[in-house]
Image (cartoon, rainbow, N blue to C red; front, side, top):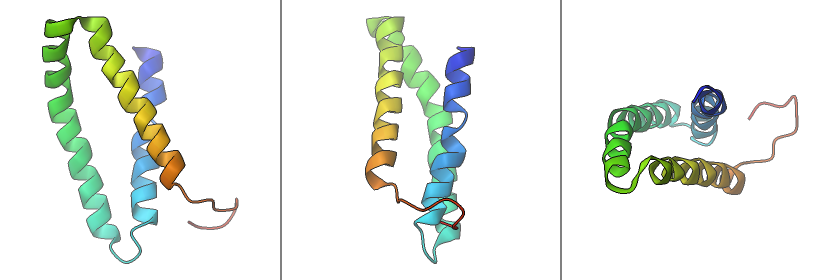
Length: 89
């Protein structure tokens, strides 16, 4: 759990910076939507995972978390912009 937490800890700042970087003139709206999405996930995901673990088992429930993390990384890879180092996004 500790190692998983360390791996996931960097996702929020990364996704928030990508959302703000691609928002052009709507940076406030992009940050609000990212914050709302993360707050909703923090509220709902433990309940959903607990229910899923009761239904199918703990290993399959945490398999869903792995699938979600892989999908987030794929989305970042597909939609990410290539910005040379030292230049602002």
